[in-house]
Length: 348
Image (tube, rainbow, N blue to C red; front, side):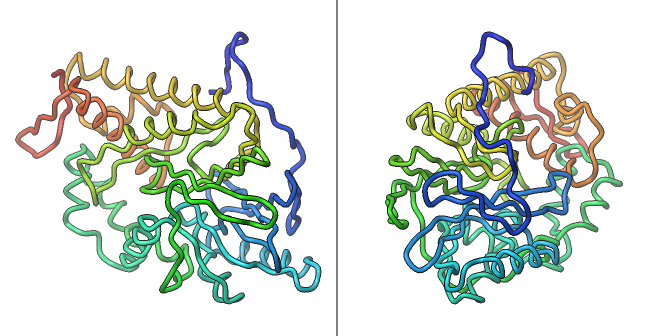
């Protein structure tokens, strides 16, 4: 998506300088940008601090690692005396966002704020820590076309989610779509998106013209939209595309503060790019299955032509299924099951 045609508007990045470790860089009145390391191919996450009485609210927290914990310690040590977290907002349940939330809320005795589905989903995922891969999961990946080597790799890696997060608090404050929150001098509205995660909370401040978008809207990279074994017939891409239309109601000149890459202006331009991206992926999958039936694993190799590691392959398979399920929902493909139990997607 970096090869934007010359006749299309481009995103504008007003803050080319990155915040250094343990620094809070102000990007709007009372809104500060923090950057934490990640132990993944995507090696960073943007976090946000919103000034309010008595300190600042934290938005997202980073993955549970020694490096991130050290970065938080350095940041807290560099703050003026008495300036401390007042509450913790988490946009969604993925470890790079929720990983340190339990640690910060307990250290400062403050409340966790999340949407209900994200909080409960996180608790369920964490409960799988150390557990053997369930039969439903193994069947799901075999049906999708994985061979035994890929299935065995999945068995070995299953149940690691909880190792990347501190235990969540046993209670939380619920965020919901359309809710208004007073944070310091400004009012913020919760805007919920779906598809990347069940009930992803973004925060929009009309007065400042700022949207904290989490992973729902990212520049340059597209949020992963996947089908997982726990809901094998889900249709998350339809939800994601509906969310795009919802965010188009926000002003075009909104300053978007994403969880990865740089803050940018050009919200509607980026939403249009995301729609074109998924339209192209849907066309690829549909064209292949019009010719002959394909498993999700076969479509993966058409949609993702680069080398993928085991971690990336799981996300790529989930994304392939999301596009195939959307085509089934639109009546363009049907599901067929062969003698070995593999699901093929074929011309309707």
